[in-house]
Image 1: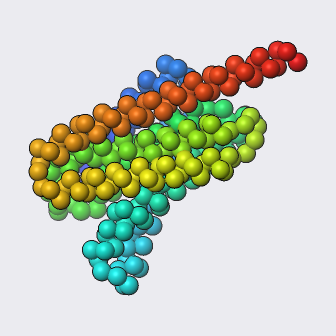
Image 2 (image 1 turned 90 degrees about the horizontal axis):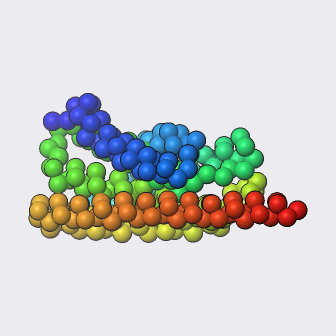
Image 3 (image 1 turned 180 degrees about the horizontal axis):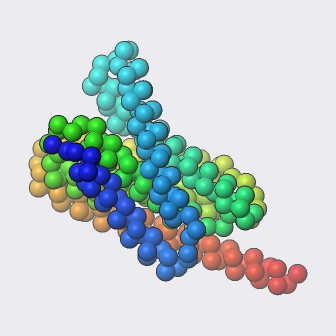
Length: 248
């Protein structure tokens, strides 16, 4: 039986801890002014996604079977809707930064990862609290903590990385780069859902635990690598801008 406090501790807190760990490491390179904003934006985004997907499911089951609809939500609707929502909040945060300082120079890969962690935390809370009578296995929770949360972080970090790559000082949103980032994020999300769903069909708890630990390690390393890569790119761009202004 899951009560609201348990849902918060088991669903939301682990994602917040992972977000704090990533932000602490990234702050050794650059202080970001939008870490908390990004995490909370992701949490709000998960609420929108839950309502949207629930509405889609109720409408679509009228025209097709429930099992088919669940499959489509798992592999298509969910990844597309959730990644578009996260992209929307990342783009909004970028435009806010651009409005405030006229530059919008931030490590948006880091902000994207934090949005992903916030999204995963709120999604976990909604999932557990929305079905309080269900017994959730340790393997399932571990997969969410180590796998799903970090998949969300890496997916939106990829979008943020493309935002950093496409950004020009003082310009607006690099729509083409964001589109490429969205395709990468949706692909990663769909592959994760496919692999995680297929693993649970096998019904081998030990395999799930090992998979969660391995996948979590790879995903966290991938997220940290993308954030570090974006930081190096930003530093090079800032150095080039400084040298260019020095010669003028």
